[in-house]
Image (cartoon, rainbow over the protein chains, first blue to last red):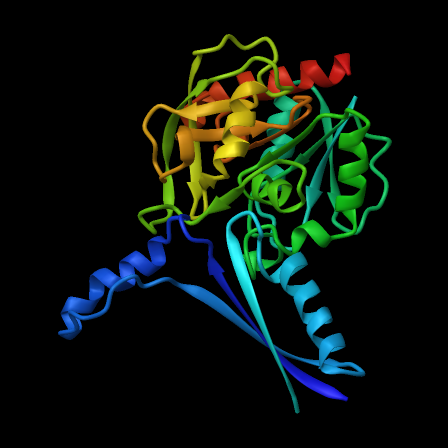
Length: 83
Length: 221
């Protein structure tokens, strides 16, 4: 079976996020004043061939923790759906 | 005595590194990132640049290049390994040095001379260089802000692993860190480019002080 995995990577709480802070500082120029705590991150989408959703999730989680995120500074979340 | 300068696709400081090492008194050879054996070399340098385009994160893809197993084996045998700028990022991604290099706090690319102070004489790069020696060495990076957990920072202090500190912090780096070593002192990473400060014609010979210390340490190893 084929599954589609989405891995979201974001900086861990407490790690400075200059990109998110810069985006937040730009918001008044758009007339937006109600948005705070902007955090920047990355999203990765890929297909996994696996026998079950659990197996696909295990593969995606392994990829997320060993490559897509740097566990020293980043957290990752994994979502897997059947195609 | 021969130094290996590892070339990844996207490295761009390898020729400067060879030139600097030669001025410091060793022959040096370029080694492609597919090499799997570094045992014929006396020291290994990972140069600056944008290995694998810096895609994903600087160093994230370079650390799975075939040569990195050989770099790890060389380091575990006690061989001197120095990562300069992008090479420092590769060493942290590879787990050969603790912590990580984050985007500069002001999100601008730093390209300037930086004054750094030697914080430890224990590493292969600062062996015999007095603590508090100040050196003017160029920096050239976007992701040079060193970050680690409080626990790791305590270990760096306890084990005398902070090698160089900025006199004026240019990027938000934790504890003004410009370079660190592993516990043994034989693996060093630094953001400044000593190989670009080896000639009065180019403004400074302060980098040669570090490269000569490195070559001296490699001769003893």
